[in-house]
Image 1 (cartoon, helix red, strand yellow):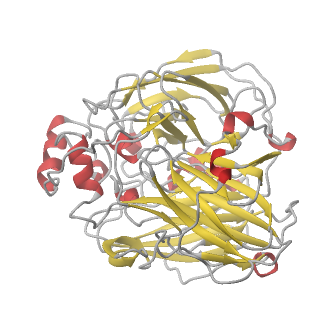
Image 2 (cartoon, rainbow, N blue to C red; image 1 turned 180 degrees about the vertical axis):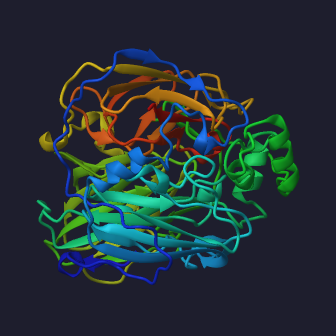
Length: 547
């Protein structure tokens, strides 16, 4: 991404032409203090909707993404200044440093062009689809109105080839977010871009800001694509959700059936016949198996380590680095050689500042850190955890940047994970007993590749019910031998004992994590593993607000 001075960024929006915008939506301010709510007492394990009904309309007892409750919630926030953008998703050739690859991307670049607004602004973005299959745009981590969440067959119809869709909503909370498709395994191509919502009352002081997007890359290399990789992993079963089946979902057909999987498998190209990697991908930090997919390249801001991005600064500069893991199957360990980092935010929300040598980011997670620059040339080292490969960017105050660096000692130094952080006081959830407990046991195995929640593969008609105003506890219980980064749409949750506010949390094998949230954003919201191959194989479900 382009480096920018803080003065150049504050108070400005990046505008691009948009057209046919929807009716105006509301706008609010920065993080409010979290508060508890009274609600109905119940325990819920979810109830299926009627079979064959359109996902976005069934069943009647749940609030629709297009219902008046969703519109009323947004309207209460009030209108804000409109910032217009346009993204075009297209098949293209990308230069990733080590080579050029055929892939899909936004505006022919990876990552896509940064979207930057101020909290309270209304985002009006037109997504134009020039891809050979339907797509959508999901706003990862944003607490937005439900009908703009970008889940085909649930919150919207998929955007067909040659068509466009206008997203419009208030960017309510400041923070580091990103956008990506929620259709099939499109995420594991070049379809992602950072979304930065600035705080108009920013308390941090810094001289420069860098946005750093991490990725694992296989698309267009050796005949591999994410679709053929999913076929290989699933033994030809295909996925469960929202790729080329999206149009059938929009027409009301049931998804996740054996017939649907067979049709998807027949429509996709055959997977390359390659043997599984000889060396196991193992990480003690992740509790064992590190991932399902071997990648030929790992990227920082779309660049392989053979041709890294170079960030320039002066000695003594205070730099804010926004880190985003946009990978499909890889956790990254990150360290800046010769420096310690001060963690200030995770998943967009402030934390009690904590110093560390290194950070671990699961897929979908974001961290903001501050560093004070020393004089010299240093690697921003990015290790593909458990996979024996790495990527990097370069920080330098002088001289010419070398191509190779020794492994920085910080990668093996003090390492911080989210469970060691505490939420900043003004965003900490008020302690309260839950009104409702939802137990989600993560099930499945590498051998069968039958990932699911509570033994049920994804079905868009499935609902785990909640009611507005409740304090809800989701108890994630990982019954598998694999780690999973679990992500909730449209909300943030608090980790236990005053832990940070997040929307994505890592579950190690055979561990349990309880997360609490306030049900204050009506609609139908996805809960899923952010390993795109796990989610597409069935580890997804829906949290539904009852009327």
